[in-house]
Length: 258
Ligand code: DGL
Image (cartoon, rainbow, N blue to C red):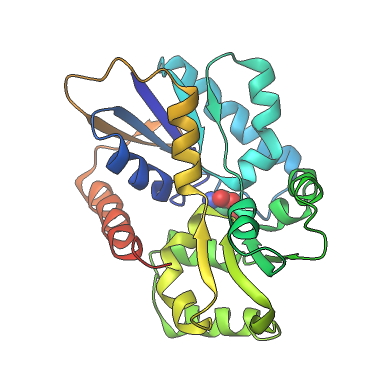
């Protein structure tokens, strides 16, 4: 069966990267909405329009399940897409529950986009987990820009993150939850800045487990495959494929960091 992974840009590759390890026999499509990235700084109405167009395209490709590998798109549009389409649609959820289950009564910093941290979905998650006194939210929009231009490790990335994180008393925090899939490219810099006891958690394993639960994966493909699309255009250009490969190699390096 063909499974689509969808993101505003290259962040969703981190979820796909994990999925390919767990499900090496599947056919995958990766759709990056490169014409419209970033989503996180736009209005929810605009993002809903972008997601709607991407879904129309993916449904026409006859995919059997869609993973919305984007916290922002999940926050804004997953409910509407589930009302419209009957195929399994798997969204992202910041790994706040994992953090609180592992380290009860300790603070958690959730880093995400502006849309995600101001959205109803995260508020409801915090209420459901009774985490009002433990969850702190922070938007880190520039990381999306750094990731898109493959500036994974630089003095500018480090300066930005040190500035954004300087006011937190991390002695009170158990973990940093990456609530935006683009942030996975910066785990090494986060690791250098944060004290050793602060764990870095992402939602990738949770999302892939949910995909396995929800999609009927019995029919494995004879041969695994991966196709890339930028806002509906198939990527075949060698230079672009090399760019995508560079993202995947970066994710190989970031995988073990926690
Ligand atoms: N990768 C996305 C997320 O998980 C969105 C980043 C953006 O486009 O602003 O939130």
